[in-house]
Length: 112
Image 1 (cartoon, rainbow, N blue to C red):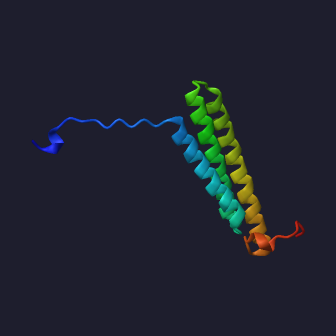
Image 2 (image 1 turned 180 degrees about the horizontal axis):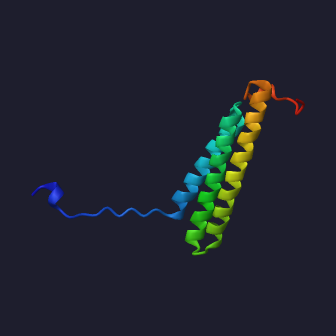
């Protein structure tokens, strides 16, 4: 008998702990990127990773407790993240036009 002809199923149960561990890992990676990186664009991307980890936590807990509140908060956080990205990129473009650099060490004051 060929092994593939046997009907078998692998049951994999993904619990809330898996989601929370993944969210914690994403949060730590995003926080590490914000702390270590000196490039403003990379820092903005790491802030987006932080927000996505928070969204994952909200949605996992909402699904676990059968509540809709977590989904609504996650949608609100995504809207805030979109606004943050648009404003942040506008500021980065303005800073690059004025100083010809996006390195965070070059911006020690808000003067033009």
